Image (cartoon, rainbow, N blue to C red; front, side, top):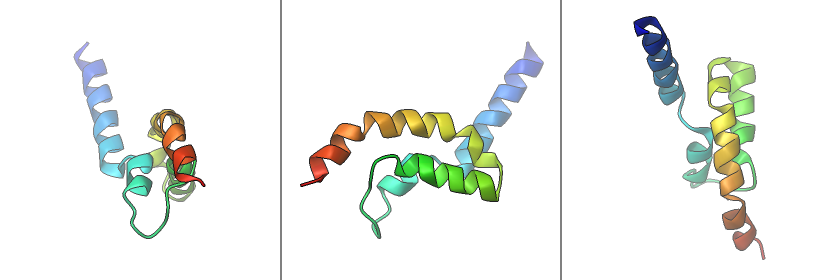
Length: 75
């Protein structure tokens, strides 16, 4: 049980260190947030570094939840 808890804690810390791709893209002032930008960002980082792949499913879920926001910004 302790070993499982340790592994889960380590994975969560690694994910926290890489940052959430959706949040990174959402607060980026240089570009307008578009649909699934966080997932795209995580995929690019995963190809470059490998670690952010842990955040990819969470970014996909958050990007999906933010679709109404994206659609409301389009005119």
